[in-house]
Image (tube, rainbow, N blue to C red):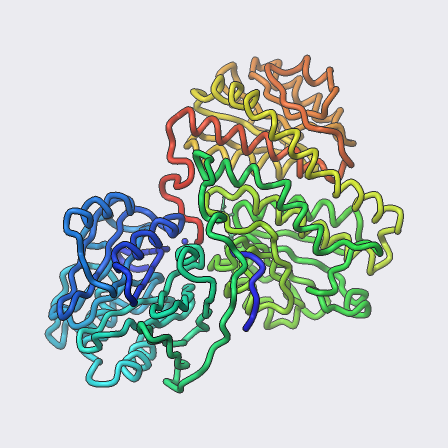
Length: 624
Ligand code: F6R
């Protein structure tokens, strides 16, 4: 039994990051499936469907929209079976229609399945099937899988699945009902995530643990190529060759309340408010009386650390911005050559790595396709690979040499907030560890950082208490069509993160610039209609940024500044300002990001946006 500290987006139509759920047991299957699908909506939410087996018949219901739209349809039909599969879909290409929603079947309905991933050779397979007389009702790659499996399957289901996977190229996680296998659900995965849940007289599968938390805490994580058979009596597993295997059962210590809103109107607001707890939990596991101690997770010898020359940090989106902050911090306290790259760029460049490289992959989900692809390339060169992730059982976590887990607990809101703080905290600790091991960080510096780290949760709480002040400010600017975010040094990536939060949940155009770069172009955008959000804590670049504020003011742009408490000069130079408590210069990002998250939240709320599930986005980007 292993343990689990906390958990943790080509084909013609369906570039899909989706959520899948499967259930077999004694409960009403549609209830379990819909409940699980609600908890997976963060993975995709443009259409949904379920297939329920009741005696010999398999009934399929699909609906465009959210799981709640499907729920209305299902509640009028009241399906009674105790076995079924469900799917919530997120498509990047093609129409969102009920026809293209999952589950998909072959024409005779011998095989019914839900699928997360992409079958890259589906055109080729489809042409073969069409040549042999099969006709198709959708343009999805998933229907191709269903038709292919129906053609392959004669007799033993596991052998049929072994053959199926030998024919498929790409990534997939599937839950499958086979007509002549009445009391079973089959699962198979390669590339896309899938967990199995163990119950008493019932079995489950889902794309992610939160979907099943109300029912079980015991999980099996399938490896690439694994096949599973779920029945009310239990779970059997086979490897990609069809050989029977036994898998470890992992007990998760997450509570179902962790995936509930607990009275908050949105998961995002709940998660913003959890950030002081995240910092406390991050530190409490890694700091003791002798200072920073990562030995439980990083078994890198002093000689190995001494031999390092460079640190490459690779990530996407918010995780990339957290990495940019960490880059600047690590530069200040180590002698290492640090670089940060966007995974989707890094993987296609000729960047030299090797034994002298510490490669740090930062991913909340641990399933981001580009980050994983970059990790696989770097690993081959002999670099030491570390995952900084909220999901210690993710594909990324299982492929790297060392895992530094975020102590954030499940993040359900699509916009990352508490995992950003968790990533910052873990990356800072990694920087301190490297500085200490290489002798570039003195004991007094280490003590100074660690003691101020311990104060940050309290300081975060004082900022969170200003939510009403930030709400009023946000509502005043909520009708603006464009925002510019500015910052220097450590505050530049915070400006990028603030702009990302605003655009992804409020759909307002927001651009972030290094404050010193504004006069090299973006200043042309400024007038009285473009608010400029300036992140300007009292650090060594404060005066420089103050000059940039004057330049923006001279173009009549309204200034909203995030400043250090007591900074009267900045207050006088802004239309509005939000202050944060003073802290060590290097630690200001932990505080300055909080008002920006709240600002984005309240702007989006005022505009009536779907905050937890913004349009066109999905939480886990499992395709390239
Ligand atoms: C923004 C956001 C995304 C993710 C990005 C990487 O709020 O959540 O930009 O940060 O998709 O995801 P992970 O960290 O799971 O690799």
